[in-house]
Length: 127
Ligand code: HEM
Image (cartoon, rainbow, N blue to C red):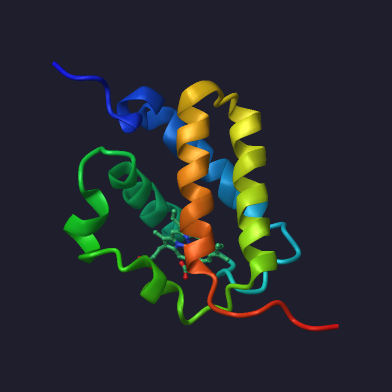
């Protein structure tokens, strides 16, 4: 019996709530709205699968979609520093609203910051 994984510490219910709330914010964010599909049902479903395994839970994403190759999957979208910040701000607000705090939040958010920075593939628009 080891320590719980971050996935176990957060719990499936709370992770699902977090992701649903996150996408409701993404769908209203002026910097993000234009690159996401109008219907985010499938996006949220895949993100739940991905974050489950990202946090040490079962490999739901890989089982259905193969290796995540996240940066490659984001290449079709213009991910600028501004959009990376916007993505993280939606996540921060969602974490606030579901009351995810303490060490687990710091651990999770910090990893998301690194991953979000890694997704950047375009400069901010000038001017
Ligand atoms: C898919 C944007 C960061 C995980 C997508 C899609 C967009 C997007 C537009 C496609 C949605 C669709 O067509 O369904 C962004 C932006 C980011 C960002 C602007 C800012 C940095 C991240 C991060 C993660 C992530 C940090 C994970 C920690 C995913 C996953 C998918 C996805 C798992 C689904 C891939 C698939 O189609 O199988 N993202 N993303 N993204 N994103 Fe991001």
